Length: 264
Image 1: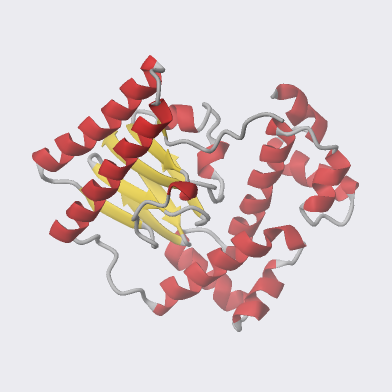
Image 2 (image 1 turned 30 degrees about the vertical axis):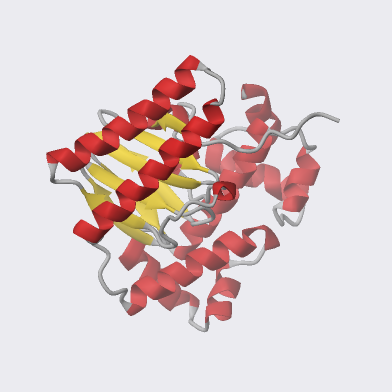
């Protein structure tokens, strides 16, 4: 039996994180590891738990594993990302955090930690995974110290933000069920019209857009990165038929499911 290789901490540029395919960041999705992003140049926007916020230079973003998110970074922007597996058990926030780093020392400390991770990855020395975990521990300390000195600009959630977050959590849990947006609204105790209006207000997207995008992300991931039969992918994602699944993929990508798989 092959030895089990536990997930390791990984530092990448945002371009590497997306594998130069924008849909991997821009469509609604949740990541299996905690994600820490530092935007050092340019600007962009993020939608986390149904709340849209702008990203500017020297902004740090932390998104816990399993949190529905979208990340849209400008073409002239540059950022670094650190993925931290949940198995490591570091002390990290349980809620998303966004920080604007105005102090040059705070920025320098963060960059030094991430650059040390990158050097460790590049050199492939013995005990590299252990060293990366140690650097991730320093990143955890940095984040908690920074939060203590400059609390995140989240504020008290409004009713609209709470509904958007609840919808996002429900989508992440049940998007494979084949339920419609109206059924999600019913589960939340609101009308489809109210849910749509709320998400337009908080995220700039409709509730249906988010639900569709989450299904599309998972479909593309399974088709382009996986080897399961297309019919099984359709069934696992709650589509009523393989034909409907094909029309869905063609509508949103311009390609058939098999065309996406060949492209990868």
